[in-house]
Length: 89
Image (cartoon, rainbow, N blue to C red; front, side):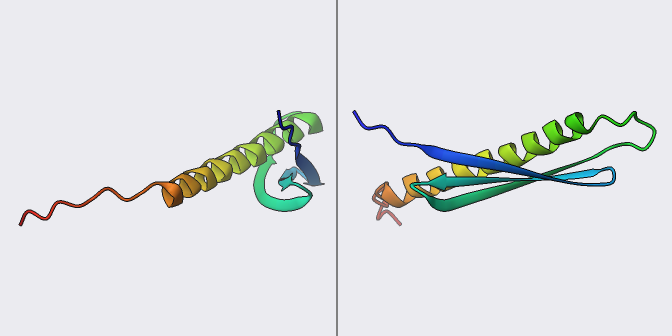
């Protein structure tokens, strides 16, 4: 059995009503992919920074997940033999 550790670090930066999140995936101590997300508080809403953090982080992780899925699909395609084409004209 093999155990692998993949690490995702989420960094949040707040500026006024905006929160930006960066989710970095490291595999075997090498940076592989980075996802980004943001949230913006409606000025009429009560200030609750944790909600903005959660939303921005969720969006960054979602972006990262989509990139990881695309990378896996690309890797599968590169390893899958191309089907023989018909020579019928």
